[in-house]
Image (tube, rainbow, N blue to C red; front, side, top):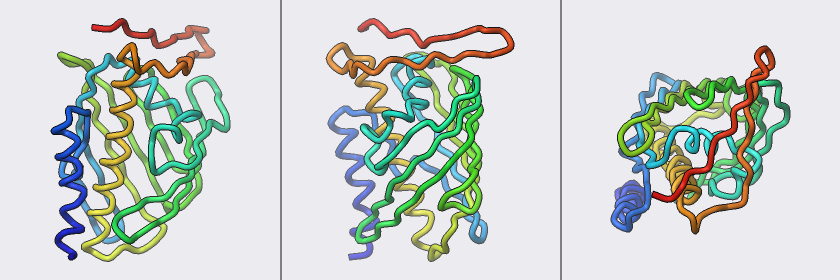
Length: 211
């Protein structure tokens, strides 16, 4: 039974890949654990240009619509390219359900980089970095996180749960990117305008034409 539960996320990921949807498998997520501290790395390919990938990754006011483990997500404050974001949700893995919440401060460098620092919430400490680079056919996404959970996890459970939740979140984000690129997937959500106060240089991600 334990082996079946451990294999279930990987089998589901393989099924999604077979169907042609953009998917991140739990095995794509690299997790290093030192005591209670987790380091997380995952590299992904999004078949969309960096401005569209950045648009989806920062669409916090609508993110609960397309990321399944989020119940609430909103931007509390925007100060130029520094945002404060609140999110709530629950991680589900087999019979385990763990509610979580966070308030984070983000430093945005569109469409290249997103840095986030946890101000409060379920994690004792959390810092993340998402880097976007253009590559043939779309965008290379490299996500790195340093996390100190606010609760203790058994040695065998913690990394597996982190892999599953990270893969589930980014699979949902990649699917939303693909949906916004396709003409039939247009959501009607308006792109966010990013402005630098010191230059008044506002940049709006441009909608992509169908290939």
